[in-house]
Amino acid sequence: MTIGLLQVEILLLETHSLKEKRSVLSRIKNLVRNKFNVSIADLKYGDQWGRTLLGLVTISDDGKIVHQVLKRVEDFLEQQIGIRIVDRKVELF
Image (cartoon, rainbow, N blue to C red):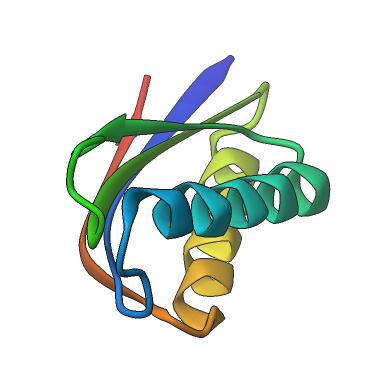
């Protein structure tokens, strides 16, 4: 069994308040959950409207599948308008 963790630090380019940040993150988290069936949470920078750290977790009996899912999520996030990934970290357990 393999557990995969993806941490993605994101700049939110089009948010100007915490209310806008929550709205954008809610949309992104729902899209990612529904499309990839992963767990996702906002981990850091809760008081900064232009920045966030998302944590995503998936599990499978095949490490290759875990890595592929996390890579697809990362690619999906990079295609979203209004955000820029500034750092990423993948860990497999």
